[in-house]
Image (cartoon, rainbow, N blue to C red):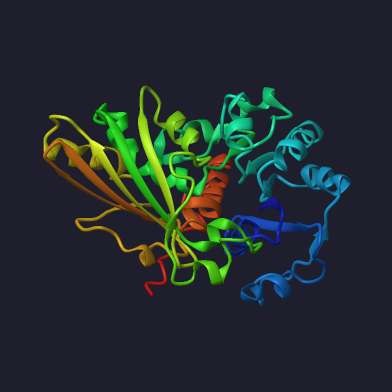
Length: 341
């Protein structure tokens, strides 16, 4: 069994990781840490009662180092800015440990982008080139297998890249793409903040950070070349999921050529499902699936895509990356249907 520790167990990322991993046939979760919580994990996450007997481990620097030495993989499920400081000592202390970071701290290869997009100077810029971007479907699968440090994608970024990748890969993204991404409230984290907690989101719908969301630079880097994307995220009154609508200029590419681009890239992907109609968000909630529909016509392709922001947008992709890093079946612990309602 692969021994795994989750650092940061009170947020939605750590919670969802544990939910997925308690049913994983090849993984044993040895610890779930917290700076504030004590006692049984099920007291904080009651839906895991009967599935996990873990108790929260009080986190200190010494505990982090010990867990890195005692486990095969360590997940960082912490806010932006924390992993950048806490993660590098673990790589030094445990030569064999592998780390998957769910924050944005190692997603961008250029350290000069961190002050502008994340609000801090990166304390370990030399490590950025060693982190592999963890989106297997978009050309990173082989590199993930050999990586010690994987930077898990952002949720909006994963959805947007997956919507645009087939066209960008084949040179069919022939102009500035416009992307509208709509997310549920869990994307704002477990701690209530002004503008994101239930009274503010219930019955409400609004855009936020138009053209300046921190996931945009990782989208542009992943797509490569001269990709240009106008990205506008929206806050919606549901808890889980992301729905993307992308308007993509494809020039004189024919409808069949556009459809073939998606078939060529995604037909053999275990988690991507192509649809003839725009996908329902609820079909993806609780899963690692990506549901996609492409509608070409008159020089434009409209791509609609749905994922679970806590699944394929976070913990599901992290488990998929673990499977690749340790030579397991890529779908292990993840092959399940959505709730449907």
